[in-house]
Every structure is written in C-alpha cells, then in structure tokens.
Amino acid sequence: MNTTLLWIISFTFFAGILSVLASSIFLVLPKKTREKMLSPLISLAIGALLGAAFLGLLPQALESQYISDPRDVAATILIGLLAFFLLEKLVLWRHCHHDTCEAHVPGPDAKEYAAGRLILIGDSFHNFIDGILIAGAFITDIQLGILTGLAVTAHEIPQEVGDFAILLKSGYSRARALAFNIATSITSVAGGIIAFYFFRESQQILPYVLAFAAASFIYVAVADLIPGLHKRVDLKTTIQQFVLILTGILIIYFMQEILH
Image (cartoon, rainbow, N blue to C red):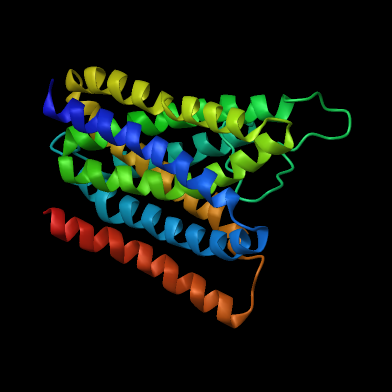
C-alpha cells in the first residue's frame, strides 16, 4: 500500500475514533467537572486550529509551484468562509459545544430522534470533508498532514461532546449514541481515500484544497468556538482563555519545528 495513503487512512481513522472515545469518556464525568474542562479544551482547540491554518496550511498553499498569484489563495479562503457560513445556515454543518443547541434540540412537538438524525447527517458530511482536507495536506507534505490531522482531532473532541449530549437528549441510549458517533467518524476515512486518488492525478488543485482547509479551520475557530468563550468576560477567565489559545498555537508551532 502507498505510504501516503497509509498515513491518510491511519490519521482519518484514529482521529475520528479518538475524538469519539474521548468525548464519551468526558460525558461520564460529573456535570460540574465537564463544565470546568470544556472551556479550556475549546481554548486549546482554537489555538490548534489557528496555528495549523496560519503556520502550516497557508504557507504551504502560497509556496506551491501551482500558485502564480497570491490573490488566488486569498480568494479561495474568502470563498471557503462564505461556503461554511451557508452550510451552517442550512444546518448541514453545525458544531455544538454545549449541552443545548437551538438548532438541534427538538421542541415539544418534535419527533423522537429528529435532532439526533440531523446531527448524524451533519457529522457524516463534516467528517467526510475533514477526510478530504487531511488527505490534501498529506499529499502535499507528510509533516503538514500530521499537523492538520492533530488540529482536526483537537476541535473534534469538544464538538463530539456536544453532539453526544444532543443524541442522548434525543432519546438515544449511551451505547447507541456511541455506536452512531463511531460510524459517522469513519466517513472521514472514505473522504481521505477518495481524495487521495483524485488529488494524485490533479496536483494543481492541492494548494486550493489547503487554502480551503485553512478557511475551514479559521471559520470554526472564529465563528463557532470563540463566541462561546465570550459568555464569560471576567479578567481571570479572559487571561486563562488567551493563554490556552496561545498554548494551542505554540504546540502547533513547536510540533512543526520538531517534524521538520
């Protein structure tokens, strides 16, 4: 088997499984403990996403031999941000990081499992796209693929915590919710394999895929995760959040230095 393909399959599979298992273990903890841990996890995830986007993906995209005008990369990022906005508005891609979410929690007249089905459809699509982005990064550079895979895992854990909670609220048992979450996470492997064979024959598309991946990370960090941190504005919490975001960025930076 091709070494790059093996990397892609390994990272898409284990990143998905790891995030699901970590979230399921997290939900076993007492509610107060979860609330204390979730905000730091999200802050670290923000740093990892921004670090991977600005220190890994974008430099690689801009340095590509297939890019003659940096404005092409900038335009791809802009298109990506708008696309993720529309997808989220259409409730195809929605990240929930709390026990309640107005887009998914059913109202008093909602059918049983309706919100859960929506979550599963959205997660399947989201994970499939993650697999494509990870594959594009690995085909470009193994080290970049590792960083991208780690960044995806970092933001998947708090997302899966929210999704797991919504499935339970929708009437799913813990075992059923865990099984479905694992099943949807495997769609990232399918996305990675399909992308590997497609991008291998279309190398000129890769820098745009990297820019699109950067747009995805930036959007999730800035539009989805950061607003949740603004619910607490006291000085101590703000400093803690900032330090953890910076820590997430530094982790990506030093890992990049070590890998290179």
